[in-house]
Length: 171
Image (tube, rainbow, N blue to C red; front, side, top):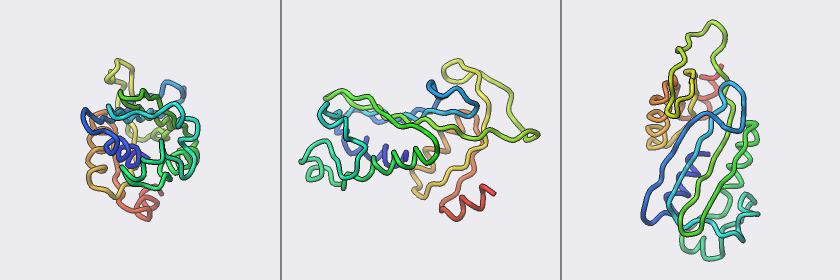
C-alpha cells in the first residue's frame, strides 16, 4: 500500500516534496491503531476525478497514462488491501498544491507477558506504546524507509522480504 502511494506521490510531484508520516489514528480509538500518511506537493487531483479515484482503470484524466504511465489499478488495489486488513483509506487534495493520502489500520499490540515499552511522549505529545510490527516488503528503499520511521517511533520491527517469509514470521 505504502509503496504504491509513495510511487504515485513521487510520480506526480515535479518539484517540492514527498513525505511519509505515521501517528496514532485519529479516527479509530483502539490500541495499535495507526495512521500512515503520504503527503506530496504535486499536481493535486481534480474535483472531477475524486469520486471514482479508487475504481479500477481510473486515472485523473486521459493524458495521465500517456504522461506518467500506469494502468489505473494501483489505488483500487490499495483500497482492496486496506479493506482486507479492516482499515480505511482516503485522501485530501488541492489542485496545484498537492495531495495527502491516509491509511488507518489497527495493528495487533503485543500479547500479555511480552516485553512492552513504557508509555512515552510521541511526536505529537500523545502517550504511545511500542508495538511489534511485521513489515512485508521486497523493495530495499521501502524497507529502509519503514524501518527508519517505525524505529524512530519506538516500535520493534521484523522485516520479511517475501510473502512466504512473512507468513513464517507471523506464526
